[in-house]
Image (cartoon, rainbow, N blue to C red):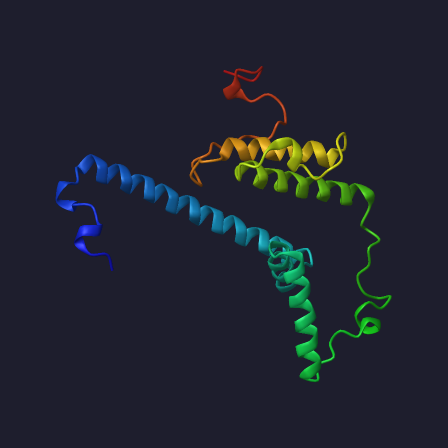
Amino acid sequence: MPNRTETADRTQLEPEIFLKRFRSIADKALEAEDAKAAWKSEVEAGKASGVDIKALKLVCKLRKMDTRDAQAMLRHTILYLRWLGLNLLDQEEMFDSAGPSTTGLTEQVIATHAAWEAEGQGYQAGKAGHPLDPTNPYTPGTETYRCWVIGWYDGADDKGTPPGTKDIKPKDDGPHPEDGGEDSP
């Protein structure tokens, strides 16, 4: 609990400042509730599509980890399961012909995901303030290179912007009335 000398003197707080902060905090709370509801909706849609949500959460956790740490974690997990007598990872049983395959994994599906990954990496690099040219790990002229650059510029634009304060950009799917396009009143 902070002591009195560490906090602002609340007796000097103006009502206008309080009400402004209150509105801002309440708005962010509503945004957080909306985001949580949207996340839950996506999880339910994933379940309905057949996605194993527990496995997805593990994959998300592993993606955030350094590659060596993720490999070590998986290696240790397999070792601990063996020590417990739970040989769950017999490859012949896990990947039999009746199980999931990679038949739907087309080049287009792979390219779309690679572009998404590249843009996310570029965004993180731009937001972190890394330079544009030497940081891009993709081959110049490729789609992943282009997506990484787009992400980098978005991240650089967001650099120093507090979370939740950036304007949401609509997808470029034609004219928008608010932009003065053909459909404007």
